[in-house]
Length: 484
Image (cartoon, rainbow, N blue to C red):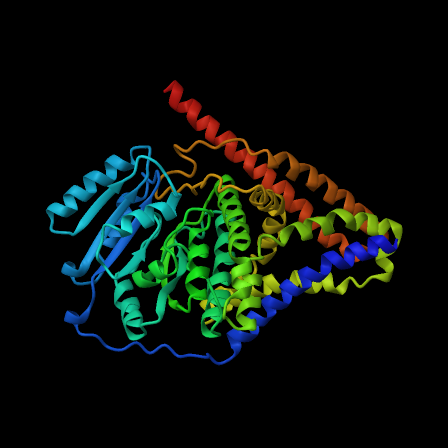
């Protein structure tokens, strides 16, 4: 029994430390800002050359919409250079080429750079393209994002006002947040990340990551930090940490929103989460030691490490779930505090609720978003195995394959994209069964934990069931194409 209690304590302690980091971010969010960003005014003739990079990989449904949005940017035409970075293997290349030809004929400075391989994936494409431009600032937009017309007008002056500012990052908004339960949950999750976490890290002088899209880099910061590198699946987090360890400052603008798609299909969401989980873990392995040895303050180092632990710490949560029935039946749990489990589980939900209040607090709409929190907690619980498998794959070494998240635009969700069977689905189903058994045991031994087990049970069944439904829908669509 003592051994079980020690295991319980060893699992709950790191989760509590991570939760304390989240609570600290909430504290920083409400505290007055350490620095106030006041960009200078710059005359039209003083605005610099800006390169807008648009990385693509099989984005046939959204590439046209992206180009239409980018050419509407309010910025001097003679100082705007657009690069379409196309690694596609489908008809996206033809669509993009046709659009680029038409725009060039209309006087737009735009180039299409097509690669026949995906060396370095997105980071490789960004790095290779940088050699083909002379601009000192680089804005990046993923294929599904639609930047507001004043995006450059609001970001470039900040970069010009501070020579040590390396990145200005905007907030993500959502084009299809109300499409289904999954998109609503993702919108709630991302709102908390941007409106509270990124905002707090920026205003508190803490490290935060460029989010891969919806931001502008100073070219000198990219080059000084060693450039884009393809040895992790999160090239944005990798370069962000390297640049900030070199002393470059990052600025987050919570009121500058660029709308993008969130995945309406479970298979796409799982692939995206797996990529983030594996890439974040790879970044931790790659830069953790250098981060601890850097000249950053202790506060910055601690919060930076906790920031990249969001996924690598999840195996501890699953291990806790697995041993909890044994703790209950053996009686070991009676002499152990259960309150830390609740405190650890409260931190991230608080972030989500505050995110809704920050963005929609002027009306009662924030309550509608906050009311979706139970669904998000259920979804997050069911995603644990998917993320843990990705984390463990990072331990094996190697980069792996960059699995893109399908974007659908106005096309039906799942149309035209192959969905491969996900072997973790079997594990998720059996973990759901295990969680049901845990809930039954909790009814007898620890009624306060019934909700804990039930949340995992519903989450695992929802994720595995939805994954199978996606697979069935995709197979039916492909069969329809073959027989039509």
